[in-house]
Length: 228
Image (tube, rainbow, N blue to C red; front, side, top):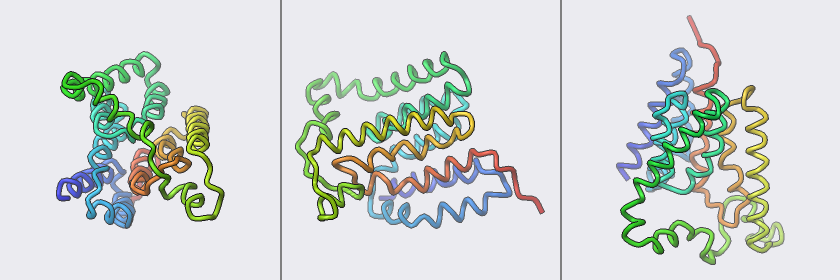
């Protein structure tokens, strides 16, 4: 638990440091006031292990080395994969397609290098572990619309129906991020997890970090500063 708390504290510090000086007290209040962050971190949520490098990658995405941080996040947990198209959209918008391809190659290289020992040890087991969320017959559970299905608010649909809803939502979110890539470039960091709300398995642990992601997006916005 201490490691998870440390990851959260480091992420919070980085967000506050990236915020304009005059707005830092307000940002600090926002991240400290996000009760879900503190509650799930203290209870031992391992999600912070992928969240910290992901936060670093987005906060400093104008730097090429941010692709290294994203690669670490992607190699840590599958949830980070949902951010890939939004990270690349932001990079391509600012730096062009060639830089986007370079960043994708760098992140992929980190992912492969990190997983290579496990792939070589047992390729079949590695693939099975990677695809477990899709291949295993898991029971419906979560805080998204599946909650209404499992608790009588709505009819419980087949798992494929929720997968279709999730895929449609993902495409819509990517379309929105692309259309608003110049006017609202930070929007993608919050949109990335929205499709999971429609999933067969939409655990609350997927969403408790959204306040932190929102803070990351706001920290990069050109909001000006507060002066005396």
